[in-house]
Length: 537
Image (cartoon, rainbow, N blue to C red):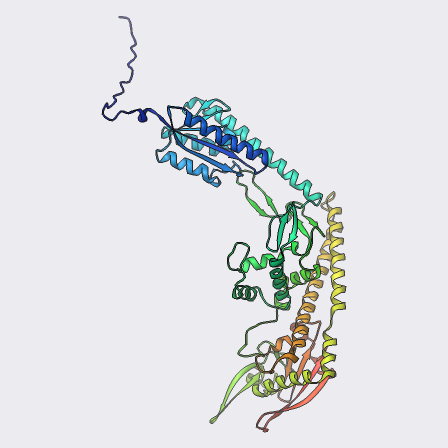
């Protein structure tokens, strides 16, 4: 008997009661995308939107289910395209039967994304039609073709990314800055222009930083004055710090601060020795001077040295400032009770625990505080020592010299780095760079000390204007270190040394000539202590 084959067609049963014209129509959506905001791309974007709207609404077999369009967004990451993701979700919710799009590259440039979403939609019966390639996603046979075409689109994306990087590099080499709106500046005709109202705030922020206020204090002051950021919100630590570190406020521009390391994910990282950076000086009108900017960078880099100012009243104003003149240890408060009488002394721990190590004795805290206040009043009331003090703290000449040295070293380092490019393993050049880096670090530390001295100078100049000199004043903004024993107190003022450096010089300071020498007597007249004010280099 001969074998026969009979084709049995599927018998689709239609419910005549629920059948209507609309149920036979396809719910059609369209997806459009352009990756930049340039005028020709915007025209293409508008044409895509208008064309698909007309195509869908004019077809009697179509029901318009929406136009999804991403403008100015790259196609390498689906999750970063909000309209695309909205369309996918709508399709999964059963609202779309067919998606029209211009091409595979418009749908996506990431091969994995394209294949994944095509298969996901195909599983739920949603078709995608790619107009340029004239192919539909419902036929599994085209998976191979889609893989090839998507790979081509991905490679095109890589090439575009490479071209963009090249263009950015070329512009940076030529010192061409693409200005973006930042607080303090407007952007007009591709150039920065100063925003008069915001620039006042920028100057205030830098001025406060130079006066020794830390970033948290500046944030509180701005918010207390009801000054808002560019976005109309309150100030935060990171916002103020970013402003203080932004070289554009002194008229310069550092290009290529960040670099994209993955053209698909668009992951961008800080450019820490990955590619060349370019520093453009005098690019636009500055809001602050370059000297002010550099001084603030010094403060930010060495806050423990430079930031001595505090607008808070400290409970114990001598903490961390007063040392034993015999052994160099910190003097700390200790409560003493003798019968019904109680008082506070300052001791170096050696005195209390082991008299053989240090025999300095323990000065009374009230006498030390009283002498400290009297010494400040004496300095302020007499013009001769006061002017001598101001001259002693005037370190502008030294600071200018250090700034010049810093610029010269940086120029030498740039030159050495350029010499290193053709021969990256040249040990002699690398050693020179290391030596210069060490020297630069020392200069920056010394600059931070001088900046701190400037803060002291400004504070001391303001003292005659105070209605009353009392314990609320900041002794750390006046004296560099205080040395004390049971017999005498030395108030030291040094423009060029940190407190750690001064502790190592205690023997020298003890032999130094004083500019002011007095005897402080307690209010009841029963106790007293000698004190001296010494100007120490």
